[in-house]
Length: 264
Image (cartoon, rainbow, N blue to C red):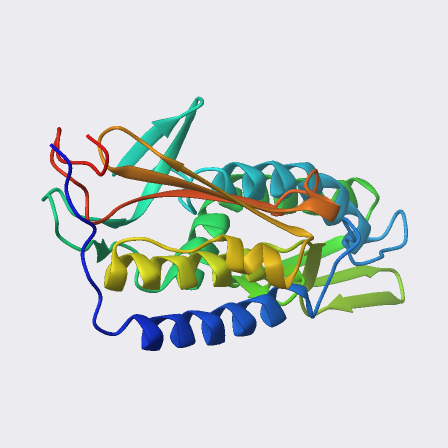
């Protein structure tokens, strides 16, 4: 049974909206083009250098892991694709219905997931830092505060609001907070994902080639699945091996019942 494509009374308006959103998203994505990983420089042998060395691998691994799972450390509602559990960022279980956004504050959600993913290693590293300096004869006063993960254009900035006071003889050293920064395109890719989801909620689909036409360094892959799910994979071609430079997720919107697809 061959079904006719649905007419769209506001087709011209839709294309204008799409063009504007695509241009805005593309500008956001590539105003800042990181060339790779750049942890804030710290001198070897300093407390800042100790924390950087202790946490760097964990931060890299978990940002990459979360990015490949739709922004969640442990996805609850997901589509399994090539061994990864892709969180549904937009979903409906009905046919011919537009999806509902599942993570309305995507940036905040991803920031929280990153913070959760490193919290155990963070405690371990600061405990080790305290023990390290006590073994060297220092009197150590470590006051722990909150951890803040900021997703910013071109980078992820992690601030540990832990103050450290070191005393040894007449020498005193104070550190008010520790910072680690990772250069990547996660902020920009989340902007593109948010734009795509906006299309899915309104039109049931998205025109991804427009993004790549505006900026060729962005690769947007879109794979339709038999159950009506769409898998999206967003990649910065220049830095695709950098953690946080690939983001993939799932959506299910305006799905056709079995046997009613176009050309069936």
